[in-house]
Image (cartoon, rainbow, N blue to C red):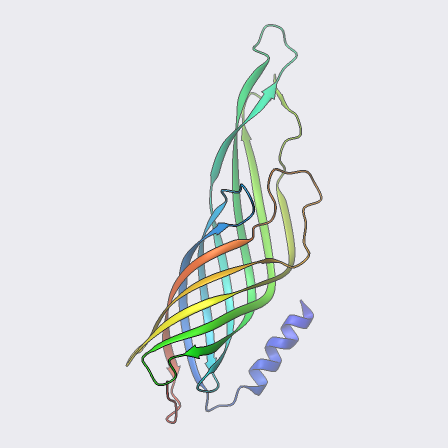
Length: 216
Protein backbone atom coordinates (compact mmCIF):
# COMPACT_ATOMS: atom_id res chain seq x y z
CA UNK A 1 0.00 0.00 0.00
CA UNK A 2 2.84 2.43 0.84
CA UNK A 3 4.38 1.85 -2.58
CA UNK A 4 1.04 2.59 -4.28
CA UNK A 5 0.62 5.84 -2.32
CA UNK A 6 4.18 6.86 -3.27
CA UNK A 7 3.40 6.14 -6.93
CA UNK A 8 0.22 8.25 -6.81
CA UNK A 9 2.08 11.13 -5.16
CA UNK A 10 4.76 10.90 -7.83
CA UNK A 11 2.13 11.11 -10.56
CA UNK A 12 0.54 14.16 -8.94
CA UNK A 13 3.95 15.83 -8.60
CA UNK A 14 4.99 15.31 -12.21
CA UNK A 15 1.63 16.27 -13.76
CA UNK A 16 2.21 19.87 -14.88
CA UNK A 17 -0.33 22.67 -14.48
CA UNK A 18 -0.99 22.86 -18.23
CA UNK A 19 -2.48 19.35 -18.36
CA UNK A 20 -6.15 18.79 -19.14
CA UNK A 21 -8.02 17.38 -16.11
CA UNK A 22 -11.29 15.39 -16.14
CA UNK A 23 -13.58 13.89 -13.53
CA UNK A 24 -15.25 10.71 -14.80
CA UNK A 25 -18.20 8.89 -13.21
CA UNK A 26 -18.28 5.28 -14.43
CA UNK A 27 -20.85 2.48 -14.19
CA UNK A 28 -20.76 -1.03 -15.57
CA UNK A 29 -21.33 -4.78 -15.29
CA UNK A 30 -18.87 -7.63 -14.95
CA UNK A 31 -18.94 -11.43 -14.98
CA UNK A 32 -16.40 -13.90 -13.64
CA UNK A 33 -14.33 -15.70 -16.29
CA UNK A 34 -13.41 -18.65 -14.05
CA UNK A 35 -14.64 -21.93 -15.51
CA UNK A 36 -18.18 -22.76 -14.46
CA UNK A 37 -18.61 -19.58 -12.40
CA UNK A 38 -21.83 -17.56 -12.47
CA UNK A 39 -20.66 -14.76 -10.18
CA UNK A 40 -21.53 -11.24 -11.33
CA UNK A 41 -21.13 -7.67 -10.10
CA UNK A 42 -22.24 -4.10 -10.81
CA UNK A 43 -19.37 -1.62 -11.06
CA UNK A 44 -19.27 2.00 -9.99
CA UNK A 45 -16.19 4.21 -10.07
CA UNK A 46 -14.86 7.74 -10.06
CA UNK A 47 -11.84 8.57 -12.19
CA UNK A 48 -9.61 11.61 -12.14
CA UNK A 49 -7.86 11.77 -15.51
CA UNK A 50 -4.84 13.87 -16.53
CA UNK A 51 -4.42 14.33 -20.27
CA UNK A 52 -0.67 14.95 -20.50
CA UNK A 53 -0.37 14.72 -24.29
CA UNK A 54 -2.27 14.01 -27.48
CA UNK A 55 -1.94 10.23 -27.14
CA UNK A 56 -1.52 9.57 -23.42
CA UNK A 57 -3.56 10.01 -20.21
CA UNK A 58 -2.96 9.09 -16.57
CA UNK A 59 -5.89 7.98 -14.40
CA UNK A 60 -6.53 7.64 -10.68
CA UNK A 61 -9.58 5.45 -10.01
CA UNK A 62 -11.60 4.58 -6.93
CA UNK A 63 -13.91 1.65 -7.70
CA UNK A 64 -16.66 -0.18 -5.83
CA UNK A 65 -18.00 -3.48 -7.17
CA UNK A 66 -21.46 -4.30 -5.84
CA UNK A 67 -22.61 -7.92 -5.51
CA UNK A 68 -25.26 -9.58 -7.62
CA UNK A 69 -26.29 -12.43 -5.32
CA UNK A 70 -26.03 -15.93 -6.80
CA UNK A 71 -28.26 -18.58 -5.22
CA UNK A 72 -27.69 -22.31 -5.43
CA UNK A 73 -28.70 -25.47 -3.55
CA UNK A 74 -26.27 -27.65 -1.59
CA UNK A 75 -27.19 -30.89 0.18
CA UNK A 76 -27.46 -31.04 3.96
CA UNK A 77 -27.58 -34.36 5.86
CA UNK A 78 -28.87 -35.67 9.17
CA UNK A 79 -28.43 -38.74 11.35
CA UNK A 80 -31.90 -38.30 12.87
CA UNK A 81 -33.93 -41.34 11.73
CA UNK A 82 -37.18 -39.42 12.13
CA UNK A 83 -36.16 -36.96 9.37
CA UNK A 84 -35.30 -37.35 5.68
CA UNK A 85 -31.61 -38.21 5.25
CA UNK A 86 -30.94 -35.13 3.11
CA UNK A 87 -32.46 -31.70 2.54
CA UNK A 88 -31.73 -28.69 0.37
CA UNK A 89 -29.59 -25.91 1.83
CA UNK A 90 -30.00 -22.65 -0.07
CA UNK A 91 -26.59 -21.06 -0.57
CA UNK A 92 -26.20 -17.36 -1.42
CA UNK A 93 -22.83 -16.12 -2.73
CA UNK A 94 -22.26 -12.34 -2.85
CA UNK A 95 -18.95 -11.06 -4.30
CA UNK A 96 -17.91 -7.44 -3.67
CA UNK A 97 -14.75 -5.37 -3.98
CA UNK A 98 -13.27 -1.96 -3.18
CA UNK A 99 -10.24 -0.86 -5.21
CA UNK A 100 -7.79 2.03 -5.60
CA UNK A 101 -6.09 1.89 -8.99
CA UNK A 102 -3.67 3.87 -11.13
CA UNK A 103 -4.22 3.59 -14.87
CA UNK A 104 -3.35 4.90 -18.29
CA UNK A 105 -4.93 5.47 -21.66
CA UNK A 106 -2.77 5.05 -24.76
CA UNK A 107 -4.45 6.23 -27.95
CA UNK A 108 -4.36 3.63 -30.72
CA UNK A 109 -6.48 5.40 -33.35
CA UNK A 110 -8.39 8.64 -33.92
CA UNK A 111 -5.74 11.23 -33.17
CA UNK A 112 -7.40 13.88 -35.36
CA UNK A 113 -10.99 12.67 -34.95
CA UNK A 114 -13.88 12.99 -32.49
CA UNK A 115 -13.83 9.18 -32.24
CA UNK A 116 -10.84 7.58 -30.52
CA UNK A 117 -9.72 4.06 -29.63
CA UNK A 118 -7.47 3.50 -26.59
CA UNK A 119 -5.59 0.71 -24.90
CA UNK A 120 -6.49 1.17 -21.21
CA UNK A 121 -4.97 -0.59 -18.20
CA UNK A 122 -5.02 -0.29 -14.39
CA UNK A 123 -2.84 -1.50 -11.53
CA UNK A 124 -3.43 -1.05 -7.80
CA UNK A 125 -4.78 -2.52 -4.58
CA UNK A 126 -8.13 -4.28 -4.22
CA UNK A 127 -9.99 -5.54 -1.17
CA UNK A 128 -12.28 -8.36 -2.29
CA UNK A 129 -14.87 -10.29 -0.30
CA UNK A 130 -16.97 -13.26 -1.37
CA UNK A 131 -19.66 -13.69 1.26
CA UNK A 132 -21.44 -17.02 1.71
CA UNK A 133 -24.75 -17.47 3.55
CA UNK A 134 -26.71 -20.71 4.03
CA UNK A 135 -30.41 -21.09 4.77
CA UNK A 136 -31.47 -24.51 6.16
CA UNK A 137 -32.38 -26.35 9.37
CA UNK A 138 -29.05 -25.93 11.15
CA UNK A 139 -30.29 -27.70 14.28
CA UNK A 140 -30.88 -31.07 12.65
CA UNK A 141 -28.82 -30.96 9.46
CA UNK A 142 -25.15 -30.55 8.58
CA UNK A 143 -23.44 -29.61 5.31
CA UNK A 144 -20.34 -31.56 4.43
CA UNK A 145 -17.48 -29.27 3.27
CA UNK A 146 -19.52 -26.07 3.11
CA UNK A 147 -18.30 -23.01 1.24
CA UNK A 148 -16.94 -20.27 3.50
CA UNK A 149 -16.78 -16.48 3.27
CA UNK A 150 -13.35 -15.27 2.11
CA UNK A 151 -11.78 -11.82 2.18
CA UNK A 152 -8.42 -10.70 0.81
CA UNK A 153 -6.48 -7.54 0.02
CA UNK A 154 -3.88 -7.72 -2.75
CA UNK A 155 -2.54 -6.30 -5.97
CA UNK A 156 -5.01 -6.16 -8.83
CA UNK A 157 -4.46 -5.53 -12.55
CA UNK A 158 -6.75 -5.23 -15.57
CA UNK A 159 -6.63 -3.98 -19.14
CA UNK A 160 -8.52 -3.80 -22.41
CA UNK A 161 -9.95 -1.60 -25.14
CA UNK A 162 -11.79 1.69 -24.75
CA UNK A 163 -13.82 3.68 -27.29
CA UNK A 164 -14.28 7.41 -26.70
CA UNK A 165 -16.48 10.03 -28.37
CA UNK A 166 -15.51 13.70 -27.95
CA UNK A 167 -18.03 16.51 -27.54
CA UNK A 168 -17.62 20.22 -26.91
CA UNK A 169 -18.67 19.83 -23.27
CA UNK A 170 -16.97 16.52 -22.46
CA UNK A 171 -16.39 12.94 -23.57
CA UNK A 172 -18.37 9.70 -23.38
CA UNK A 173 -16.58 6.34 -23.35
CA UNK A 174 -17.16 2.59 -23.26
CA UNK A 175 -14.69 -0.06 -22.09
CA UNK A 176 -14.13 -3.79 -22.34
CA UNK A 177 -11.68 -4.88 -19.61
CA UNK A 178 -10.41 -8.15 -18.14
CA UNK A 179 -8.33 -8.57 -15.00
CA UNK A 180 -7.88 -10.16 -11.60
CA UNK A 181 -5.77 -10.55 -8.47
CA UNK A 182 -2.01 -10.99 -8.89
CA UNK A 183 -0.91 -14.17 -7.05
CA UNK A 184 -3.82 -14.38 -4.59
CA UNK A 185 -5.49 -17.74 -3.97
CA UNK A 186 -8.14 -19.08 -1.59
CA UNK A 187 -6.56 -21.50 0.88
CA UNK A 188 -9.76 -23.49 1.37
CA UNK A 189 -11.58 -25.90 -0.98
CA UNK A 190 -14.45 -23.54 -1.85
CA UNK A 191 -16.50 -24.17 -4.98
CA UNK A 192 -15.36 -20.75 -6.27
CA UNK A 193 -12.18 -18.68 -6.67
CA UNK A 194 -11.50 -14.97 -6.50
CA UNK A 195 -13.09 -13.35 -9.54
CA UNK A 196 -11.34 -12.94 -12.86
CA UNK A 197 -13.81 -10.33 -14.12
CA UNK A 198 -14.63 -9.43 -17.70
CA UNK A 199 -16.34 -6.05 -17.53
CA UNK A 200 -18.26 -3.63 -19.74
CA UNK A 201 -18.23 -0.07 -18.42
CA UNK A 202 -19.51 3.28 -19.65
CA UNK A 203 -18.59 6.71 -18.36
CA UNK A 204 -18.57 10.43 -19.02
CA UNK A 205 -15.57 12.79 -18.79
CA UNK A 206 -16.34 16.20 -17.31
CA UNK A 207 -13.47 18.72 -17.87
CA UNK A 208 -12.48 20.54 -14.69
CA UNK A 209 -9.56 22.52 -16.15
CA UNK A 210 -8.76 23.54 -19.69
CA UNK A 211 -5.41 23.76 -21.40
CA UNK A 212 -5.81 26.34 -24.15
CA UNK A 213 -3.36 24.38 -26.29
CA UNK A 214 -5.22 21.11 -25.84
CA UNK A 215 -6.25 19.12 -28.93
CA UNK A 216 -7.97 15.77 -29.33
